[in-house]
Length: 431
Image (cartoon, rainbow, N blue to C red; front, side, top):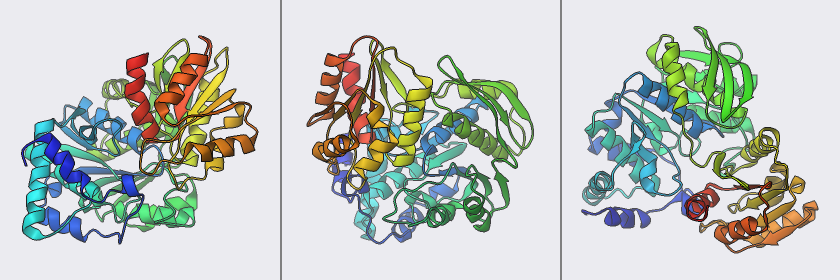
């Protein structure tokens, strides 16, 4: 295998949760064997491992930027991607090149042939990331869990710092039915030597992470917290308290009050990594550079167009709060929405407050697991939404929204990362 196209074709022949929505027999055995054959590259550098129901991606990016401000070479692994697979694997926020990715996937394919171990799509990409990080000699890896924690392919690493953002109801097909069950699965990333940063404030759920072991535990509220979280032009202005000090007037260029919560978790994780406070100028520098494509990203004005990758009820609730609280268009509000199968359409639309929008434009997410637009349409009508217009694709829904929107209106595109992944390049073309 020599080409990027060959690498993508190889991956497409392997089982993929993003496509099927199914994981058969969760296990780390394949991944452990694959990594052992590679010489366990994931054990050659320190790792900050991030789990949680929502906020993992934002927190991972904030940690990365704060470490980069210290001058470190930082490998970052996230999922899923919005537009290209390369986005998942980066060094100092620069995605892996096509040739390098092809080389790493070829190494995984060779081992599959030699050992007879057939990894899943996610396992193959994760192995490629860990191997590349070792090859380019990073100083530290920031690794986002793909699904839950205990059986996630990323959990072959040994977390120096284990981070949990929050716990909500999601992926109950693999863990549940309660949030305590979900927390217990996510706590599987905690290793004996881990400093555990717990952003979840429910004492019962936080205790799941304490009980999982680890060397030290820092809890939001008791050990760190957000003291002030104010709306500012282009983001939030924060006062953050960590176990060592208070950081006042920190500007974060992301929208939504919840990003302040992610910021203090990220800052506390970086303090734990260094076992010392972070100099104030590096906090300012690191947070100022944070960029989160597809997370309440403004794609245009007149009308205002925003995309957000909210894909579960908790994320949808946060998305709606940010849209209605932080943005106050003089005109109408239009919602372009699509979801994946497995979601309750009425629950997602209720969390998004769809009945408070003037127009709801439904569409089918561009995925094999995309929920038919008709199901969302029926749910929106049952909620009593004023005007519901159904479309086959997100591009058609966006075209209609832009055609009927006035300059004073606001358009929100959300419901799935697949919706955002389809909307983002299209909006760049038409706006």
